[in-house]
Image 1 (cartoon, rainbow, N blue to C red):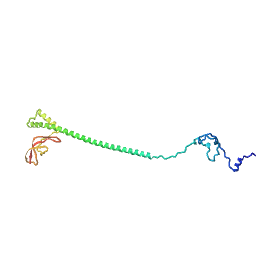
Image 2 (tube, one colour):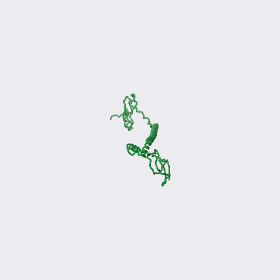
Image 3 (tube, rainbow, N blue to C red):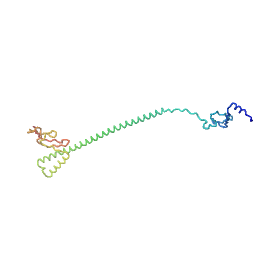
Image 4 (cartoon, one colour):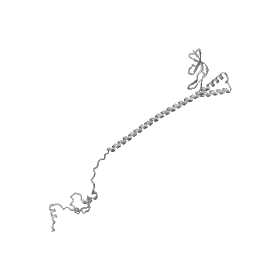
Length: 232
């Protein structure tokens, strides 16, 4: 029989299996990255279940410890966002107020313009009416002469009668109306009483005779008619 070594007998006596011996002959320490000493080449058998040194890759060497992850403090950022939002709201409110003021100014200007247009139109109409009244008033003496000539029978026929008729027609087209009716109730607004005399069979003051015709337009009296009034 082959001789038995003392170590084998010692292991057999103890009943424990012999563990392999791993020798690391690398010259560079994979952990520190430095040059290894010759006596560091031998390592004892790694405990069962522990990772072998040869299995550790260079990527695992020299890894820094994880820094503590601190939560981000958003309080300052939130205050900035709120301040910006408040500023935007304030600016929007200011724009709305300015728009409301401009709208009110525009409405006021529009109302003033409408009133101005109405006033101008009214003044223009009054000015035109005054101008027409001035022209008509200046022609009244001519109409009186035409009435006198017609009363004396000078305008029964001929060219002057035609001219007088055309002139009266033109004035009538411009709104001139004669006040020469008799037998109507006396109206102090359109009649001027020169003579009053007792009348028969009347109950109110009545125009008995027109001494001079009056004239008026639709809006005003140019000249009142001079009349003789019969009273009850």
